[in-house]
Amino acid sequence: MYKNDTIVPFGAILAAAALFLMTYLNTHMRVMESGTVPHLTVGSIGLMAFAMVLFMYGFIGLISNYLEGSEMRPGKHMAPPSSLPMVAGVVLSLLLVGLSGFFARTLVYAAKEGFNPNALQGGVFAAMMFLIALLVVIYMKFFLEQEVMAEADKAEFPW
Amino acid sequence: MYQWLDERLDLGRLNAKLFRKVFPVHHTFFLGEITLFSFIVLVLTGVFLTLNYEPSTQLVKVEGLTDPVQAAYASILYIDSLPFGAVIRSVHHWSAHIMIAAAFLHLLRILLSGAYKKPRELNWIIGILMLVVTIVVAFLGYALPYDNYAITATRIGHGIAESVPWVGVAVAQIMFGGDFPGSSHNIPRLYSLHVLWMPLVLMGLIGLHLLIMIKQKHTQPKYAEKVAPGKILGVPALPQQGLMSGVLFLVFVAVVFLIGGGFLAHPVEAYGPLSANTPNVKPDWYFLWIYGLLKIIPSSFEFTIPLFNGGKFGPEFWGGVVIPSILLVGAILIPFFSFTEGNVKQRYLELPSRHPRRTSLTIAGLMFLIMCTMAGYIGDPGMEWLTISRAWLLIIVVPIVTYFVSFWIMRAIWGETWQKEPEIELIVGGGQAPRA
Image (cartoon, rainbow over all chains, first blue to last red; front, top):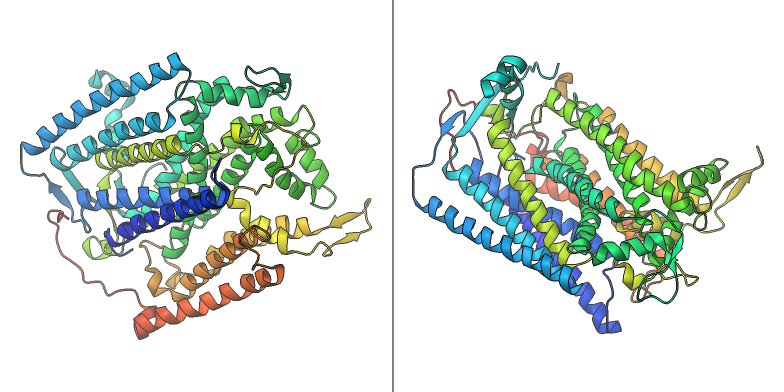
């Protein structure tokens, strides 16, 4: 709570991994006991929900620390120019185009065959969104002027 | 184009007043944003579902099934057969779970950092109401697929609603549109409450919550006091805060689609349509602690007041209504039992370690919920050791022991300084933001 540190986000990611592992072991034990598992239990769904929140929180916490630092001072800051982020951006954009085409193919396949490859569809779509997030992070880190401001406590907005 | 609009709408002033507003930066603030993004994804995926869902219990024939099934159930099978349809439905389901989990963790953060204190008492109350409404919306949507599991699980909630003395039956009839299950009005009533009325209430509360947050401003990490005392230190709303929120939204969508595709939540085909066979079900995880209370309160714990046709106070009422209501009212009143020194505004996040009583009490409360949740598994295979008397013992003893142990640990680590916030050394002047 003292500063925008990496300790709590890192701990959150570890906790998320532990919760995912608990869910996996729970499901695995049910498979060993009864042979098949038609669905996740309500307990497993709860554990996974918390695991997902903790993972997202931890991940964005680390990104925030990477982009904005742990302590801020008023002023402006611009990353030194480099060609590496531009190359990375072009490569990721090409990958994104490739994945978009592949995602469209999974939809066409599902429409033609009447079978949804759910994990593949969800996974490819997730990868596309993750790539766009990475592109935005690269833009923020290397192409956006980082500004830190100090504002008076009294606000006129919205009233 | 911009000049044309600016001359008419004074966009420059809007930019100066709103988009240049300063947002403090701390990782814990993202928990509230995750909750908001879950709601946005729920609305977006919900729009797709409403285009294909049929809120009716009329029997229809479905290709591949021998017996006719309810139209609501059949429409879920249809949604699952659409390209990407099953994933979108699964994402809708997972987002609801994530929203409740994120709202709960956000609430814990506010509690542990003292951000509920003056002047933010109202927003604390609105936040708690939002969590309650979110849980109600999720519950109302649970029965909509009209499969055997969902209907049986919803019956537990229906039973709790009916248990309220004098008015319970009428309340249940209004909420469920008649007897549940059985009435043809069940699904249309639950559907309209789930997709329209309760989300409208939630939207109103979210708008109010954000408006008050903008007016009162965020609490800030403690170090900001030494950099810019008495001021708000942070990044402008646009572009920096907006882009960071965009990154979080994309990460949210990525995670929820990855999990939603890999783990289809609530696969209706596995449960089948409503039938005479009652499956062994449990309510969703966020109701498991109430379900646990219902399991341990003896059925003999019941009396009737012979007034106005007799009001029955049964175990379902005590476990499902009274205890949760006491906890809810207690949570709402928290800001009114804590006072900041000198009655000043709470500007900075407090360190949980420097407030061991509050932190220990919060952890003890969590242990109470976990123990009650565990009681929900009484009688399950592998849980034979957990009897009702042991569950009572755990629910009472574990939170108390947890409180004293965590309090003792914090005092042992921080010794005599535990009551003090860290010393602040003022830094004069500005400078560039140090990089990570």
